[in-house]
Image (cartoon, rainbow over all chains, first blue to last red; front, top):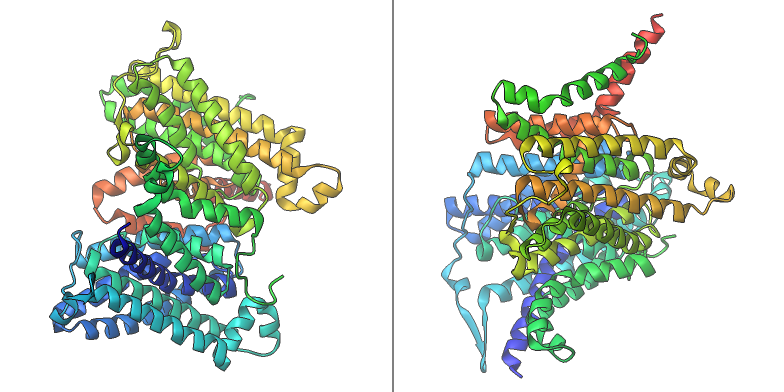
Length: 307
Length: 321
């Protein structure tokens, strides 16, 4: 067995998982606290990448791109909450799906209008372009940075949610929104903040991935579905659940893509295994979600006090 | 004119059906085959939308995965044709049986959940279908599969030629509209509609609503697979692209434009959607923007869709005497 390959794949899985967490943590809070299904959360991921790319192109500094991107996405999130989402919290879920589906169309076209149909590559500073060599293991610096940044954000969010008054309100909102309102908390401001924070984190995920894949129209539309799977598997409204589920799904997805054919080969001839493996590995996370929904609909790690 | 509907909405629908019935001859006469193609595509989608409306509009089951059944229907034509089996009954039988079986298994699991979870789990199952077809290298994977010849039926039922195919589509559309109407007015449909509004009460009345909803879901899936079978024949080309979750979103969009839980809403909604899509895309490449704004506006301000607006006009007229 090739141990270097295994470790590289584990790190790739970890990286995918952390990106998914950045998307899913905001999604799960918006879902859990406002009871709002935001299909257009993937648009924040895309817009974040374009914001960052534009700033990098102007200033040449990747760090500036990230910082401006974060502030910009916070503003975009706040605007969407203020003008659209806020009006829909009391509507039913079908309306959420429709409106946010419309928002995806709007955001995709706006990006097309502003930045054109072609994708946007984001150049990395030389420092980040190298490789880290550890014995016989070689891993790109930038991917390591994504993992470190992801863990860092997860840690900050964790402290925010578990140790601060704001986090207490957020957790309380996810468990029982009506009670929080009844206790005299300005729920509108809380919602605005959570929505904008979620948008900023989704945007950050887009900014981090864009130097590898480049920013493109519709880049968020596939990953948002996976982020929803993370939210459901982890338990709606639970940041901790989103963290574990994102890592589990990221690892499952990456590992099954590289190793499922080997595993299947134990049970069936090579030709069948090689045909079945890609299909099955793409489906695996959905199968997991269907299983969770069927047997443990509240998710694996639901927020405390949820009925 | 006692046979002609008295309400505004009824008249609009009657006129639409009267326009649709002779469409191939009219378009042939004015020599515009393109519009017949456009209309055929719209009516195929209308069958899928009628089927989605059965579970979404009447049953309150919001499925974000209905396009999967279009895919199953289309591949039921494509895969046998790939092996030179062109028998139409085989295609039809495959579409209906595979969709029924898939809907039965996935529906049995999905219907244990409610609300958001139902939306997500139906989406998950359709993504599984999507990735299955995406990974079938033998059948073209993401490049899709070309169907060289239409399904073969006896002479009097042939699908060859755009006029015959149009009447296949129109006929199946009328059948599905009629069928949904009868179904909803029957005891079965009453239970479905009842469980949408208050499932517990229906259960208290002694109905095993889970079974009713499951049967309803399977029926809807089978109807939708007919649309897929027609679509495969119509385009002569199928690809996983027709199954993605965004397609399912569009189907919901069409139901809502027309008016969910109404009999003719899905038909007008789909025609409106397809025509708008066609003409807006002629005007500007940025037509999705207009579409998106319309969708947001429709939900925020325009409750009830086209059917809702027509009924409102009817009510106003009745109020005025």
